[in-house]
Amino acid sequence: MRERRQQDIWDIRIGQIHASVFGVFRLKDKNGQEITIAIVLPAIWLGNASMLFKTVGQQVTPASMGCLISLWTDIEPIRQIRLDPGFMPFAKKIGLLDVWEKYGWPDLLPKPEMST
Image (cartoon, rainbow, N blue to C red; front, side, top):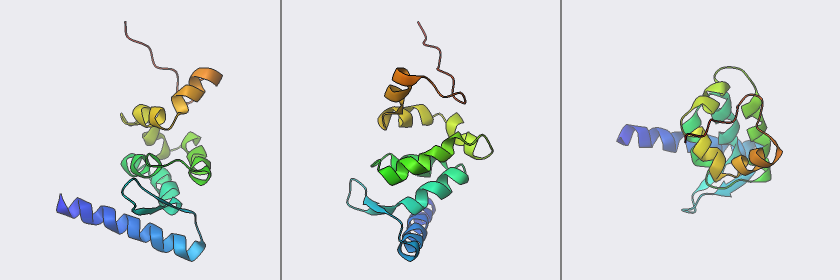
């Protein structure tokens, strides 16, 4: 557990360094910890669903919404994020389910069957 926590801290620190070098937008999570958008794109490109859910799930910004467009690239490992069991709860939390109900479901993500 401690080793995983250290890896999470390392990942966030690398994102902060990248952000300060390249001037990427910054945001704070619910605990006031700074998180950078520099984490969002690598998380998507590497198929790291848990990191994506932790960062964007805290606060959606225009910059992070721009990053989420990458989710619809139909290649590995990005597609693994859409297949993750946590994806639908994440999509609901950030409001995507409401958008899909109103405007239609994405081609790469058919509407789930409702159990009766």
